[in-house]
Image (cartoon, rainbow, N blue to C red):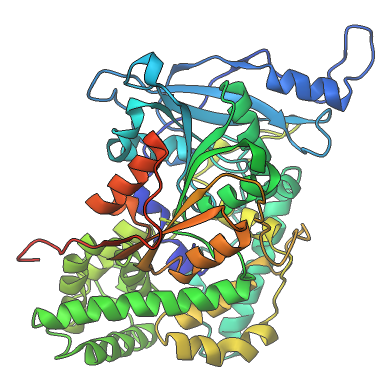
Length: 556
């Protein structure tokens, strides 16, 4: 889950926002100061009972709201199954359930199999943080069609995201983030502008969403997932988490080990890292993935260089040149170094993007920036959304709902808010300067942006919870962890460390020797067979099992 804006803006779009909003739920739980029939205020226990006793009012899904990314309403699945949406009430603060409440947006597709074979609901989180599960699930549903034989497919907008009390930091007074250099290397003015942008963004978030900012962290979202489990009528939570969704799944296992059902974590976040260590590991992960691309390119007589080392050096030199002198493109804009990093980092999320990346880099090296600019916009949505892994209105009961006033989804705002609520790390420019040589050694191309992204929580109005996520889950059943050796955003080593932190007998690893972020959505047959066998039949792969990547088709 990348933390640099340039890399962040490459990840969630790979899973594309396609859908929808949410409707009302029956029997809503106690709202701000709801009164009991005897004239008293509801106790925490009474409020919890009301939350757990909800019956969601499932309706056909409307088109996604702008804050979820916009688009058309999801079409029925090939067998005619319609997508259904609903709203669930949850406490704004799980420590004070009798206080203010909030809406959670849900989506589901009912199981296609016989009722007697149904296991329950399979809840998805596709990453970010900041991605709308309601918008994402319909587009990816074909990947999970086999699982729908025994599960209802379910996802949600986590708190602070989309139609679940969205955080909004937009402010006319803020400069466009494309005007701020993510890698201030040209004097004090660039650094001052980056520091001011982060400070002013934090202040705008507090002005627009200060009432919800303290309550959008991962631990509160994990408690929302247990409420979803109860309201859906499942004894155990069956779960599929990808990228940041693995951190959310680990948090759930820590809080509710006895309620974990069949759970898969794919593209595993390293729970031993603080934010700076995570960013440094990602710099190495993206560098390793780019070197793999460069070797692939060299085998195909890439015009950038005769071998991987020369291709990497040529790309670094091209980024530096574009940072100094952007290349004009045909739409009247310019291709700069940040756009190159957007395009390259985004293309590393899926190996089938590599042929396009090759063409784009070769053209840019020949002073034609159009293809690379198009790729950057398609994968990175510069100035728009958040991260195809990681990520992009306040709806306080006493404040106006500004979701319809937004220019787009709130993935990037939610990414920042959840990240800063989860982490107590507050780095300064001096901290980054001290660590910058390490980042440059890890990756001269990706290292600087990831290093300077550590400033994104400077001035944040919420203190944050911890340096590292807590995921220990003694007593939980096996959790299947899928690690990809070529993963740029969640490097492979994170799976083993998650297994260790979950506890003996809990974390169970499957290795995918492949490229791209995550494994299941790569389409690899071996990975899908192993994951499906566990989720559908409870069969874990053999200890030490390894799946190998399938090569790109000839001619690519």
